[in-house]
Length: 98
Image (cartoon, rainbow, N blue to C red; front, side, top):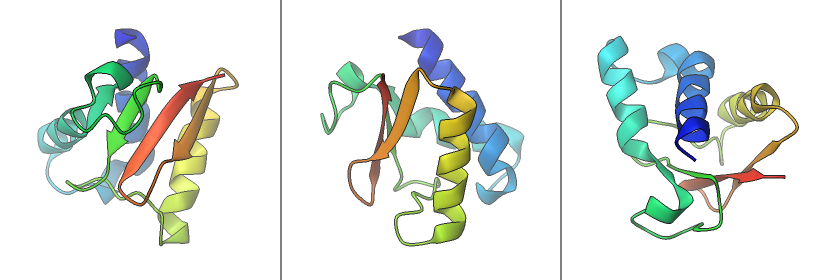
């Protein structure tokens, strides 16, 4: 699972780029503290997901804004056919193996 977690983190950084506040190190830190494997998710929102993304600390979920929702579609596309990015709610996104 660590490989997909790292891949999701890198993809979020590539797609969201300047949308996350701070310099490059701060953006990486925001992404790292907001992403977990499903089993390590402290909220246990989506324990069956490969990766869980919490969108309350600097990563926009796009749940209410189409601009950011389009970015999540791009993340989904970049991860390829083996994974599906799906909103659990406005603050949590799961990345599932297909």
